[in-house]
Length: 90
Image 1 (cartoon, rainbow, N blue to C red):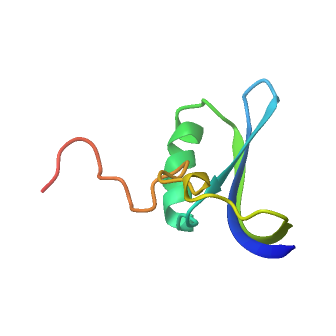
Image 2: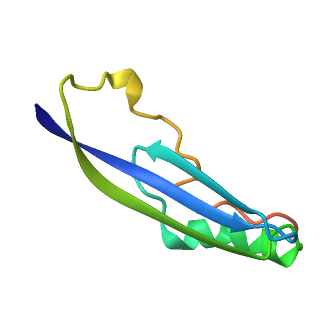
């Protein structure tokens, strides 16, 4: 058995009615904290969610068979680069 490295993005949000929702996804690399904040905070400002938390972890798992190249995601759940601001710009 060989160890393989994976990155796992995990996000938890709290809805206005107190429901907790979670999301996890295997990603090719972890997004910056700034990007994760910019994706969650506007939802707080709009009242869509009341709180949130997120992390991205590197983990090594023993597998009997190596994962195929197709198993490596090409698009993470959040963008790795900062999104462009909408509206007027100078």
